[in-house]
Length: 142
Image 1 (tube, one colour):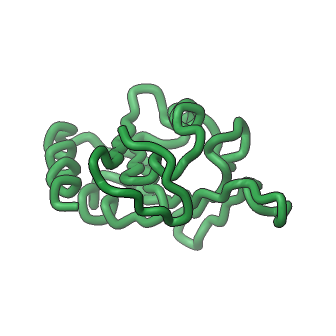
Image 2: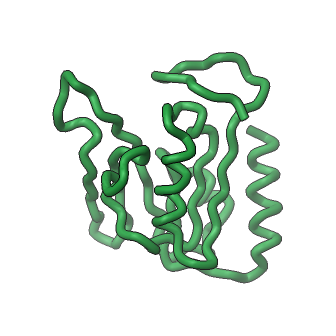
């Protein structure tokens, strides 16, 4: 996590004074809040909800907008149109340590690119050498 924090701070420095209207972090806005405070007007959250044959509501897209404009999205990033997020919404997306848990990471990356504005940024990281850690699935090392 220390390497990730250093990476986020170096990216912040690289971006200079650039600001964004909407930023998105996968699951928790911890890195956005700490690393990009003052750079993002809204810091939104995306929670992954994969399809489950036992529960037909799982994997469906959704969105909740809070009183002051922050949004929580959920959906399935592996399937087209199931993120609940309009194209070109975000100037900055952070997805740390999540792609190893996706069974179709390349499809998910294509869909992630669709929600980033032209000229926007995606910061993602994934483990290379860490042992299996489940939660609930662990598919890939990069």
